[in-house]
Amino acid sequence: MANSATSNTAHTEVPGGHAKGPFPPFDPNVFAPQLIWLALVFGALYLLMSRIALPRIESIFEARRARIAADVDDASSMQSKAQAAGAAYEKTLADAKAAAQATAQSTRDKLATDSAAKRKSLEDQLNAKLADAERSIADTKAQAMSHVTEIATTAAADIVAHLTGKPADVQKIAAAIASTKA
Amino acid sequence: MATGNAIDPIHQFIVAPLAQIRIGGIDASFTNASLFMVVVLLAATFLMIIGTAQKSIVPGRLQSAAEMAYEFVASTVRGTTGTEGMKFFPLVFSLFMFVLLSNLIGLIPYTFTVTSQIVVTFALAGLVILTVIIYGVAKHGTHFLHLFVPSGVAPALLPFIVLIEVISFVSRPISLSVRLFANMLAGHITLKVFGAFVALLLSAGGWAAISPLPLVGIVALTAFELLVAFLQAYVFAILTCVYLNDALHPGH
Image 1 (cartoon, chains in turn cyan, orange):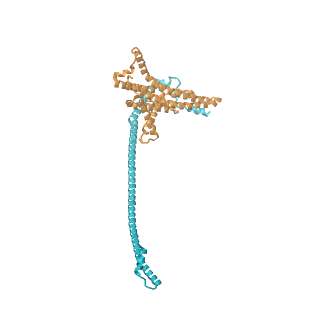
Image 2 (cartoon, rainbow over the protein chains, first blue to last red):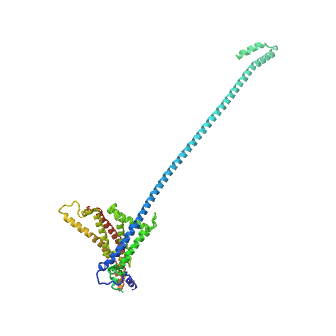
Image 3 (tube, rainbow over the protein chains, first blue to last red):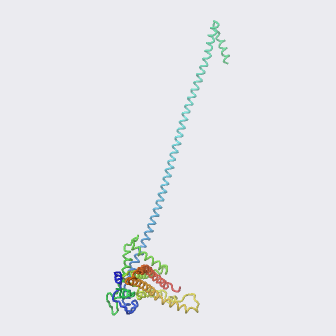
């Protein structure tokens, strides 16, 4: 019965206790030493707790609170900085966009006016050339028409001379031509 | 085999001197009870002072336990007595730690349970009541006696009410100390009896087959005793707060 032997040794209690005598917790003989040692131990416990342990834990809590508050402050200031940076970025971006648009618009306007001017001058040139050409055509035509009478007169006189065998009356022919032309 | 001691459930409460000390004719021997009081003191110091030595912002395990103990007792004191009761916080905290660690250490086999001695629990309860009386009289003088005279009571009933209040006040240290003492005593006796059952059954031939039953009982009882150990420490602390509240606000 190894087990029961083991359980027999499982008696913590100091040997030498005897079954007779008062119930141990009510034994007045042990009151004095217990009270004396309780006073010593509890007094020491009270001093250690109230002087060292509890103030230390309070200081730990205080430090933690301060740290958390500081961290929260830091975080909120960082956040406002980040927001300001974001706003500045947005503003720069908008400015740059506006500037780019203005540049593009002015370039477009300039190019449009330039090309309009060029086109206008080119058109003017072309119109002038056209007018010149029309005028020279008219001149040439008028010149040609004035020769036509002369040629007709000469040709008619030649034809008449050939047919009649005598010189034609140039003035009559001219009058006849003039009457047909009229 | 099984001797008388093996099944004597009272044997574990015997206080025996480890070193004989006499001061002026008074027995101040260092006993097994004294030894475990010192062990309790060392355990409390280890948890509350060595555990918090690093003062970490992010606590480790031991510091977390110390902070939890602080927060637990502090919220009990604040909830029961209000903020002005915090001047008694070190006292309540020391009482709580002493009772809790005594109860818990006493559950370890081969140890001695300091709080299973009526003289110890009565001394602690007496300390509480003396604190209440001394602080109450110092703070409120004769007004402290209003504690025994509730307001709004019919004059004809007043003598009885005062008598009842006085009896209830006087019985406080008794109930406070006996509650803790009796819980510890009964729990340890029960554990011991069940342990003795195992031993007896094992040495009783065929009956050894059912010896695991009381063993299972011991396991369950040990868990229950852990709860009782904590609960009694809490009850002691919260009743201390309630009594101190009377000293702070008599006449309620």
